[in-house]
Length: 215
Length: 224
Image 1: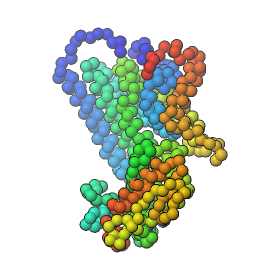
Image 2: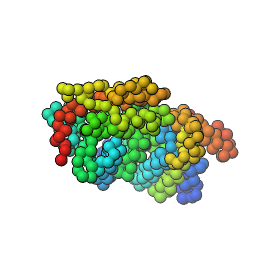
Image 3: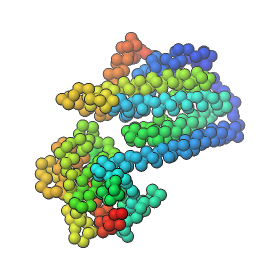
Image 4: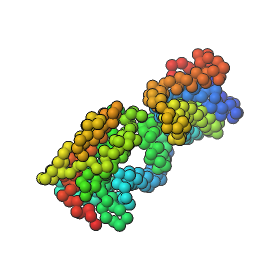
């Protein structure tokens, strides 16, 4: 969130790619760690949670951007929370109507999207200062970046912890699952591994990335 | 976050108006979504229940919900279970004859409450199937209650017959240490997952102790 104000710039490729790569919510900003750790015991859970979060992120960012000139600064956070909570409720109903099995698997983390730092962070840092279309493109990029992050963790943990990917057995029946990977400590191990890998990919140490610490 | 300082104070009525407007828009969205998805959610829940019941009572083709009270049994209306009553499912086969009874049992496991559904056969007065409704037990350990063939075998004919007064189970359902099962009302625990195994046994015992004394004397009312 140490980004320069982009209000005067048009929609560029970077508006979209910012969330996917340069400011990836999981690997760079390290935001929204609660669902990142908790639901990523399988690839499908990660993707479903990512899509649900993307839906809330895009819809709430759009509405917040649309009414950004109407909302007085004194009540802006309260307004954002009400809007975000509304779309979380919507996604909650939609998932229940779509698949109860998935709803059970994601548990309380659907409702907890409302307190996901990425969504309020984007509302405050981007949607409240930019026109709707640009906001939607940016939010979509952030959502996709978040989904990629969740899939990376969920896929790795499912492969190592259960020997499967999307429920399909990869190594045959003699594979001894590395159960710790689907347990809470495994979430930390795998996230640490991915953060390291991502920092190497970006060709600079994590401590010099210019992002905030201690998230 | 680094906005220019603006000392202008917004009038209170504008704040209230803005919040009111946003709340109204959000309210309409939520009610719209609720109305739009209500049928789908109810249908999904019905399908989930049917699938779960069919799994513990193989051969069943339709399910009806009932409640058992001290006075007798009656169909469940409106989805609300009266106080002191026990909800159960009566399953019927293609010909419409009673296939068995399914009921939910719950008990505290290792991580959280383990909720299971068990199928009761009226003729053998025993449990003939068990399926997990919800649990958060350790993957690879506690979840063996679904996958461990030897454990699942416990529920092929688990004796839950009532005593002669029909007031309680003749023998308490009990989970015993792995390899020490000697009676048909005992459950052989999974080695290494004793807490979860015991939760299943305890839950089924509590549920059966509550349900069967109320249900068995009136079981004929369920037969078409």
